Structures are given as structure tokens and as C-alpha cells.
Amino acid sequence: MVRKVQALLAVAFLAALVDVAAPAAQKLPNIVILATGGTIAGAAASDVQAAYTSGQVGVDQLLAAVPQTKKLAVLRGEQIANIGSQDMNDEVWLKLARRINELVARQDVDGVVITHGTDTIEETSYFLNLVVKSKKPVVLTAAMRPSTALSADGPLNFFNAVAVAANKNAAGRGVLVVVNDWIHGASSLTKANTTAVQTFLSPLRGLIGTVAYGEAEFFRGPAGRNTMDSEFSLDGVTALPRVDIIMAYENMDGKLIEAAVAAGAKGIVIAGVGNGNMTQPALDALAAQAKKGIVCVRSSRVATGRVGRNVEVNDDKLGLVASDELNPQKSRVLLRLALLKQRSLADIQRLFREY
Ligand code: ASP
Image 1 (spheres, rainbow, N blue to C red):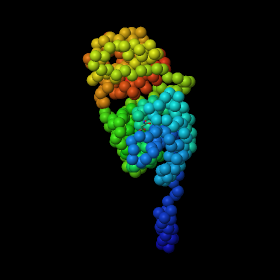
Image 2 (cartoon, rainbow, N blue to C red):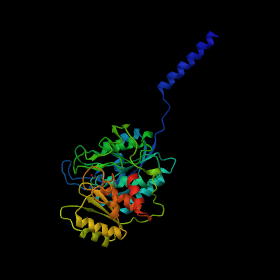
Image 3 (cartoon, rainbow, N blue to C red):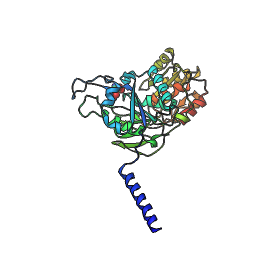
Image 4 (cartoon, rainbow, N blue to C red):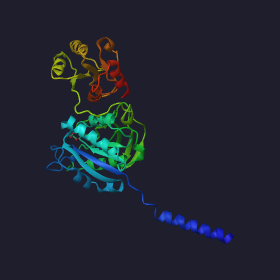
């Protein structure tokens, strides 16, 4: 009997040794890279010059430049576009969103990384946050320095973005943006510096998490409804309604507001002064358009803070909408999706509160 127990213990000990010596081969997650261009794919004639051109490097070169990602995931790439994100447009947005929705519906895709320019990444990520239908990680990344620069930031940003997309813990936090070791939520981040590598901030809500050489730490869930919980869908959508942003300033009149409507705007976002304010003539012009059914949203040109209803402007009386936490560029995204169907002003105000 004692012998039998000893033999069993020996077998168990050997099995444990084998386990330590050769851990079961871990199946790496499948991540698809969708490249759209930007400085991360940019190139300059020299490694120490400011002038460069965005969108010069293809997705295969981008992948080849960071072979370290092979330890994190099985990657394959697709080129959606190759443009500076200052040129981002509806055609690319619709193509990108459709492709992501196709990919995340597949069993053999665990996450998606999108490479993008920094100029409009906050708008694209927020748009995707509203129209992607999945809890799987969808992560955008970018770079401030072109791929040819001394101390280019793209490779590590890309590595970290793949690590976050491959991390099961990233699921269900909405669309994420990973730049310079920080994980931002799409509804919260904003570009805060024209040239610095540390340009993205999430001023009101804070970070979703951090990532250091692929090691991610998550602090919070998403702010606002998103992805699976979003009521927006691109099914049957071939075009998005025109919404213009107009900045408020000293001595502003109503001419630009009228011009926007004459150009076909169905909605207007005012990047107001302070708490979404503007001059009386501008406010009169805005209220006149609101009366005609143009949806007018008051946001702010101030870098951070909410725009509240009925503070210095009587939104109830004038038929206006307050942007709540959304800056002008994100307000425009939400309003364009909201205008895909007929809605009351109260319903549009609800959207600004919930998303
Ligand atoms: N203009 C570039 C872009 O948005 C800037 C960048 O990527 O950093 O594509």
C-alpha cells in the first residue's frame, strides 16, 4: 500500500516537473490591423526634420517594423486608406466601420487595431464607439513623429495597441485609443498639443488605463453608452447628414450660421465661448434656424468642462441643445448620427446626456 502511494506521488511529481518544463502552448489571439495612414505611416527625407508627409508607409511595412508583436498575437493587416487624418472623410469612415463590424463578428478574430493620424483620431474613435457592434477590443493608435524620425513613437504605440487589443480585460470598455503609454476612452480623449508626443489627454473623465511595454492596467469602464449598448447603426446608411461647426468669438454676427444652412447643414454645432455662450446677434441667428428645424447644439471652444442646459442661455425657450460633456468635434459626430432619423429636441438632448 505504502509503495503504491509512493509510486503515485512520484508520478505526480514527474507530471508537475513536465508541466513546469513545457507549459501547454498558449494559443495567441488573432488581431487584424486596419491601416488608414497618418504620421505613424509618415515619412521624411531626414530623421531630424519637421517637414514630412503622412500616409507613405503601407500596412505590411508597418507590421514588419515591429516584429516584437509576434509574441503578443497572430497579426494580419489590411489597408483601408493611406491618408493624413486631416483628410478623413465619410467614405473612409463608412468603409472602416463596416469592415470592423464584419471582422469582429467572426470567431477567428479576437480584436482589431486601427492605425490613424492624430489630427482627427478623437472623431474617428468616437464615431466607431457609436457604430461598432461588439464587445471585442477595438483599439486605435497613432504617432506624433513619422516612422523615419529619430525616436519615432509609432513602433511602441503600435506594440502597446496590439497588447491592449490582445488583452481579454480590454473587452467591453468601448473603443479605445492607445498612445504614449496611455489608454483613453473614445468619448473622453482630446488632442491637446500640436506637436508634443504627449498630446492626448482625457481631461474630464481620466484614463481608462495605462500600458507599459505591453503590460496593461485598467482603471475604469467606458463613459457613456457605446458599441453593444449604442442605439446607432449603419445598416442601410450610405451617407451622413451635413453638420457644421462654427466657433464663437468677440463681435460675432449671424452670417456664418446662415451660410452653413444655405450650404445644406441640417445641424449646427457652436464652439461657444465659456459655457457654450455667444453674442446676442449670433444667438438670435441660431434661434431663428432652430425655429426652422435646424438642430443647433451649444458646445464650447474651452478645452475642458461640460456645457449645461439653461445656464446663461435659455435653451428651453430658444429650442437649443446643450452638448454636455462632448467637445464640438464629438458633438458633430453624435449629431450626424442622431439626424439619421426624425427625433424631437428632447430626444436629441437625451442622446447628449447618455453618449
Ligand atoms: N496630420 C497627421 C494626421 O493626422 C498628424 C498625425 O498623425 O500625427 O494624419
